[in-house]
Length: 121
Image 1 (cartoon, rainbow, N blue to C red):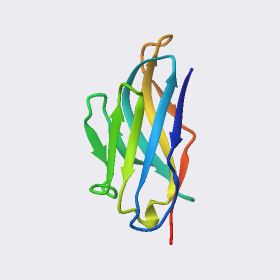
Image 2 (image 1 turned 180 degrees about the horizontal axis):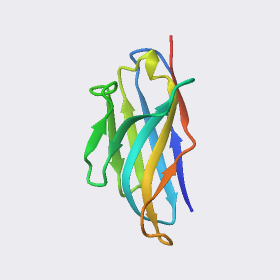
Image 3 (image 1 turned 120 degrees about the horizontal axis):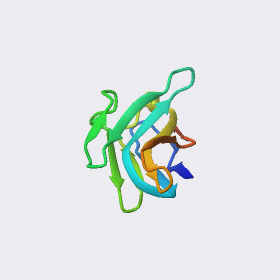
């Protein structure tokens, strides 16, 4: 079984910064693409950023230049550095990853439970 656990969310003032972490654990063989998504109240879940196993990144236009996605493959952990936060960044942030396990070698998609980010003065 695989678990994705997010941490680092919280309340921050506009213009502030937060760093989210997503730690994968379990019978992991390989972690392929990873990503961050977010869902604001009353809105659909949307892509924030993705990172491939080789480190290639992709960002939503709304966060380009403010957010940075990264990963530490040795620790099975992904990060999202969020700078210059705006009230419209308020949402539950979810970790997502394609992971192959010792039992099922081909990648399956997993979600974390989410962490709340609130940007408000």
